[in-house]
Length: 372
Image 1 (tube, rainbow, N blue to C red):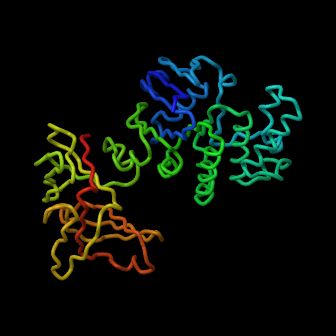
Image 2 (image 1 turned 120 degrees about the vertical axis):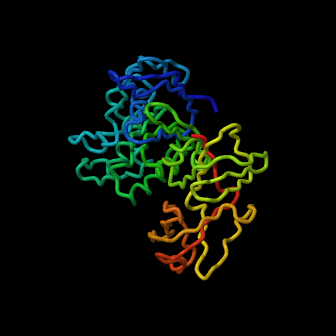
Image 3 (image 1 turned 45 degrees about the vertical axis):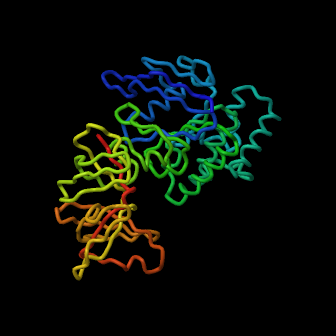
């Protein structure tokens, strides 16, 4: 795919604060791209730079091959959906959606046709005459989205689009946003701090920290192969173990974990030659629990020699979440590790109890090594 949006060496400062720091990024036509990161990381400023509400101190922004760096917002081929909806309270649903077309001088008959078309698209048929205060939160968000889509922009910018909604409605609208984006073939750029939202919706994500891009990739790449501890900890939950390399061959590696008194076996090389100190990252759902009471021996984990990738601990807390259970396990060293088990049957949650001694471990392919 060709790049529709090209961000080249963009920096934005507010006084002494560097909000966006030398960002270079290409976004392809038809992508659903997410800017992800904690509050203050620069993601919203970068979105506002794309919208034209801010101007970079350094760098250039091109959309569809045209330099937009100094072009005002209303002349850019983008429309923005704000976190607060930003609907006109004195205008009906139809009035809100057609406002931009009216300002642009689109004839009344064409306005009506396009508004009816987009209201059907966001499933708001029959609500055109309602006022914003007569709508639910989800309906207001659909109106805001319809207002952005009706002008047929090349790019739709979404600023925390679902954050004001309750959990069930957020999940419903995630599917709706994905359906609309796929159906229309538009390029969506979304800002969010919600990792689940980004993973569920985006074709690619960029994780930001202190104004800079830390890692760009598909949701699966960010989750399964984080480039740093920062990404590993921000995208989902993770267990991190500090270690040093004992063996680093093309087809396997052995990592000493002195803090835990064991060694870890990987079914691949570390890819980090000459790095003496690193971290082993294991996602909680990739860890297994085994009974330890009654002198049961440590299990052998798949793909590993005996004695590797296995730790002794005691379950201290259990959280039952319906589809899965989360276990807080205290290791013999005193540190806590999280394990997630799916509840595949009605009784899975009863397999283990609080204060029960357990073995926990992971397969040879389950861990990722991180240099920083």
